[in-house]
Length: 231
Image (cartoon, rainbow, N blue to C red; front, side, top):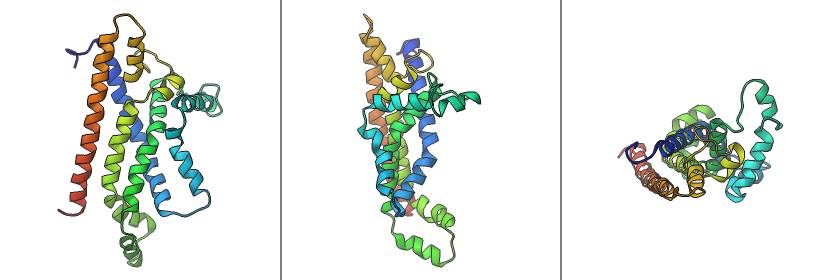
């Protein structure tokens, strides 16, 4: 990669990969739980929860970044308390992870929820009649059968996190080596004379990764489905 990209470009690429990886990994347990709740539970406020989960898809990313800054900034309602114990999100790569995770969360939940809803509930009912607890039913029946959706959602969330820009630059700025991901680097290179070539290389990289993620998600989902079905 260093033969094709300059040190500044490679730095942005590796930071983006790190941010996208941790954003996907950190949000995955929450995504599975929320998807299961939305797919299997009926309760007052379900529509509100569903709306909150999908809100990042509707709000302008800058608004999401601003809200994150108000909540998790060093003077924010939550950020002030976290700063006292040494946890700082604003203007750091961990803040970029938080922003990317929130922006990618709706895609993750959506894919997993659809996969869970497609599972025949009679399988879970049969396990219950055999004495399986709710936790056992989830880990033995529901989660394995929902793996295609988990895989697809994780890859799509990774791709979304990799391309996140608006919320990230609003919340953690554009600091080289710390928060300058690929989209931020493209924006920066476009602002300086002679930066068009660097911007173009990063654009091509972003397109390639996005297409690879889409193709890989389809292939892995089919493979996992075949394994689950025993084919």
